[in-house]
Image (tube, rainbow, N blue to C red):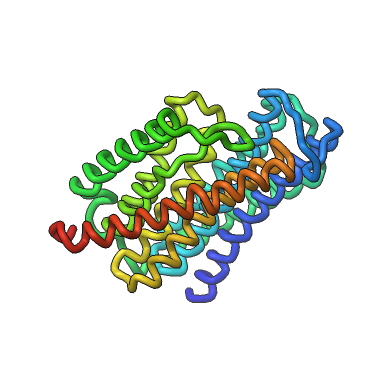
Length: 304
């Protein structure tokens, strides 16, 4: 059973990674047909930007879920791992049909890679369902307190984004504006854990994106979801560990946008935005969020 479990989480992680890699290759193929390259500034139409961002998002989300499923399976939550792998498969299939939806040609490598990734993920699902769980989830996915906390912090996060954009707008090279509201996500994560931090980051960012009409709002699910989930894992850890996790969360947020911007705007413009997001938005938010969380932990009743 141990051997099957090991095979299962290898297949899950590898399937997600292969699906994500295939999506990247397809985007590069389409850009080449448009006589564009990521090493120079890129000018795309709105539908072309939508295709690039969606194909990358589906592939990256499949990879993220595949790796998450592997981690959960290794921890012994077999049935949960199967559910996550099913979600990863769905997004891999969505990536597979994205070129058709936007009437772009398939690269043969993309087609083979995407199908192979789906096959690996399906195999991991079968193995996960066949293995008895050694760990079971206790209680509900979200308690009433966690749901209320997410609602409060998500609203506050969206409000802070809107406030900083409209009161002190700092333009970003790739469009939009720099904001420092991410400290709300970091504060929620350090005080209430990974679930609250991750969901707060995703929901709050999406609400703000909808308010401003940002067309690639779905990228925020990965960027700000990881930004909140990673620090939340260190809720009860030493301050040095928390600071490290905050830095990793901020790095993943900035890197996600950077990765997508490379294929939409080109490397030169994406680098400028990356520096701004990493050292401006993430860096300042980390400092504020850590201080606020430390003060709140000392003055407020400890969450259960």
